[in-house]
Amino acid sequence: MATTSRNNPVITVLTGPDEPLPPGMDTIAAEAELRHADSDQKLASAMPGTDVLCVTDFRTNALGHAWPNIDRLSWIHATSAGVDALLIPDLRNSYIPVTNARGIFDRAIAEYVLGQIIAFCKDFGGNTVYQQRHEWRHRDTEKVAGKRVLVVGAGSIGHEIAGLCQAAGLSADGVARSARDGDDCFGTIHAQRDLLDCLPEYDFVVIAAPLTAGTRGLFDARAFQAMAAEARLINIGRGPIVVTDDLVAALDDGHIAGAALDVFEQEPLPPDHPLWDLGNVRLSAHMAGDFIGWRRALTEQFHDNLRRWQHGEALINKVDKGQGYVAPSAG
Image (cartoon, rainbow, N blue to C red; front, side, top):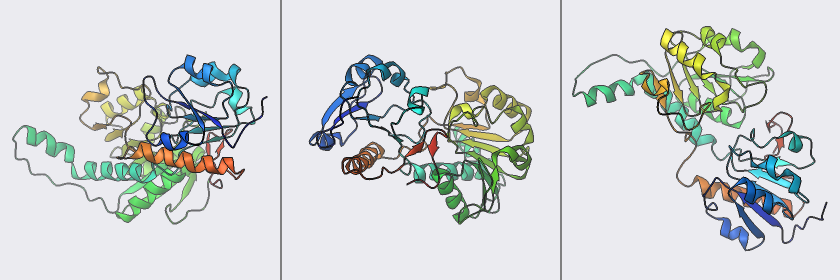
């Protein structure tokens, strides 16, 4: 492979089709050769001589097409928390480190989750329906304080969710690959293998896990049958963690009381999908963490890591490519 230059590196930014470079990239262009690719073909053409690849399209499968053209790539950064689409076998087996956007979206996602919990308990959806009908309908609603929340995925996002829930008077436990002691945010952290035994005890189940071989299809008919009938599911992790057909059946049959979904097996969600018309479902367009200014914040995070890379310092948010996420002990 060719020698990598850290003084004047070649940086390729892969965006979605017809998307511009993220805001703030002009500051990086002043100290590097910046290339922009927005398709498989353009990425393949840009890879020869590229030192650093910054990927803003978390759904991309372009890396596989471009892999044969890589000659001196020494680092890949994803401006997303999830990196499952990037981790093709060639990359997993390579020396090339991968970093992600851990930390940028945590608080915004936690606010989204707490907002959905409050909306369910206070029946904001019902208020909207009755307002549209001009119908005065008094109801009693649930208290938020005292509800039990299970956060499946005890990483940085899961911890932020648990901490904010606790601040609102809920109790929060977690699920991780293996059981471990609780901490300032989680009362208990269960092992994933014990998920079905844990589910009946919780009022809200929040999916905040990355998509891995071990989490794909984790929430299927068995999981929904194990949940309490009054429980609600909130998914801000990855869509394929949930078997959508099983979820629709569980909602129809009353196995669970409702769901708030920000991610889906198929995105965009088809306009004729039955989830749109279920009264006990709240949908959003994969936007739980997207606060005003998030694109620039991602660029700033990448720029900070770029300076570390240029000075030979340890990269932050280094992904364990075998597990598919930043390990708890990583920076």
